[in-house]
Length: 583
Image (cartoon, rainbow, N blue to C red; front, side, top):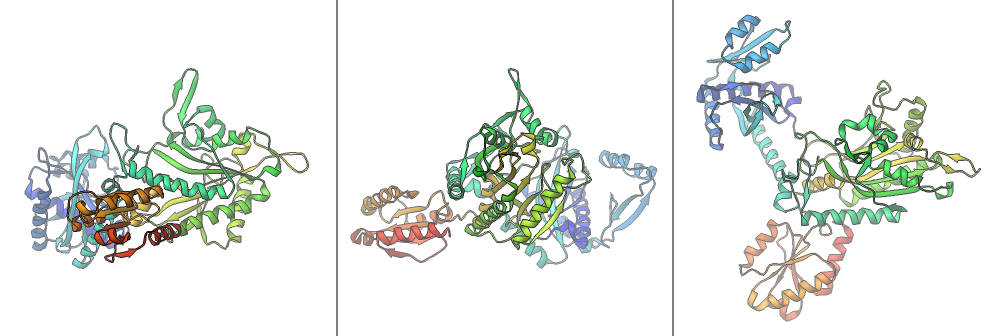
């Protein structure tokens, strides 16, 4: 989707349209006062003080009508330069503009733009006339605190977008509607996957039964893969002492992203933001020989990170998350093989989930940043070169990003382009020479000498929260059979004659481990089928007299109008194949 802000022509056009919006609002609400009206990636907005007036949906239509009238009038947009004294005099009745002027540097050239009977303080630039701003649409409105401060007055923010042609506008609006339908928050509500509640807190999602089923299937899926690769899984507490994170170094480098410290008795605790310190101590719990390595410790771990309230979003950006985390303790000689196995696992998972639009980023330190990164040039050069060697040996295309590494080591991030929004990092694999030293970890080598292991931090799904959000938006909530909370919907054609057979099939499928519901309502078949489609259930069974007499099953796949009739045995084979293929 096009980023309006990054396109020079569209940026100027949308900023000019923001002024057209303000002029129309001023005509309809003469007492209106205006704060700022910037261009954003999705178009523009203007924050407006309308006094006691509260906007309603129908008001947008009135404002649009006035904007079209003004645009058709075609007034030129004229730039004026003002002295500070002239500017203060011109906007003396507008406290918002006075505030903007007072915040300007003394050497700032103050400018305003006039179009007909409307003048607005602005640094520009603008298009030649309002006639160019004719292909626009007001999208929505919301409340917004003045200067973003919750202690200030709530202004009314109106969003809009403008293009050079009606066709471009139409295409953009269609894309917006598509994105709206894919928004995982919308899907999550409709399909009862998760919810939020102010009594629990921002960024603290509650997984509903359907969501819990999806998450459990994801956990089972990755657990089975990890177990086959020799991972052992553990459970560790959701808290740790401040000293634990001082030992790891996270307290110095990550404290601002943690929840506040809690004092209990004589100990100081924090909600854990990551799991590596706990896993370091599990490794240290016993003596290890080089023959024991690699040791792969995995955990589905609940972590807590502070995110600004304005940044939290559904399951995509949360304050409480469950990571698909693991730490691999290896000898230096094993780094290449183990790192390759992690990359192979990532690619296998992406293949199963049909993820194709991704790229690898080698995240490196910024050598000049001595605050963020542990100051050991030799360690960093060794770690970064080792990752380059491995990636080059895999013939995997990647690009390098300076300043994106963890404080303790470089990492490989897999950036995925989702159906909605900008790229996100789903999987990550990090190389760490530092934390094993901080926790005084060691193993006995073949010469009987103590050596320090290397740790590979890796997360395949990243967090189950973000991965679920990604899946819902990729699939529009049409999940594959193996992952769907309800796999099969049984629909008796006539309750009087076909209920008994429907119950028999329901119990039979449940005994075989399938997630089944049966629609026992006395409604028409067409109504029940439509409901099944709305709920995006993968398979619907239609059981009528023919099926009762022959002991067969008629089914229809989601998205298809074709009904197939098969024996029970054939139906089970069909289900097994679909689940095995992960399609």
